[in-house]
Length: 220
Image (tube, rainbow, N blue to C red):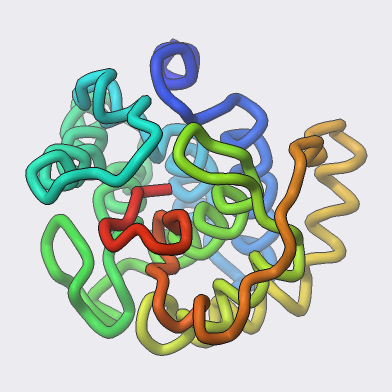
């Protein structure tokens, strides 16, 4: 029900949610997570954007640049999602993965400005897999990226946006995860744009990748 509500009213697609969960499952195995954190990561991947149900449609569906005020509203979604999920008994820390998946390795993320290993590993993994898949989907405010361009987004964010260990493990095992995505028939079908230049990659925000030239990032 939560997934259906989330995908029904915002730019997030069911295929994005399913692929993100497949990546998360694979990374949980690669990183050796215990049962509780693996379950938390999978459920968190499926419900990571649940809090967007509290963001007005005119912001979710806006085709252009968000104003600073609109972006502040968008930033409520991880905390709201975690708050909603805290009312359920999962037997594992699902709200942690959801609340902190927009935090950044070097700090400066939201909602709490955590950095480094202050951010739970589940949230650090979710940050990487969410961004990788989100930038490959066409959204109302930007075109989809190629696989190669999406990988460069992750590499450009190593040590700033993303945990270097998580990014390295994800890229090394990406082919395995993609085989599972293909098996489950959740492959990307959107039109893609050419890879961005290195200067564009350095200038643009990795998490919630925006159209080139937009200064305000859009959450993935």
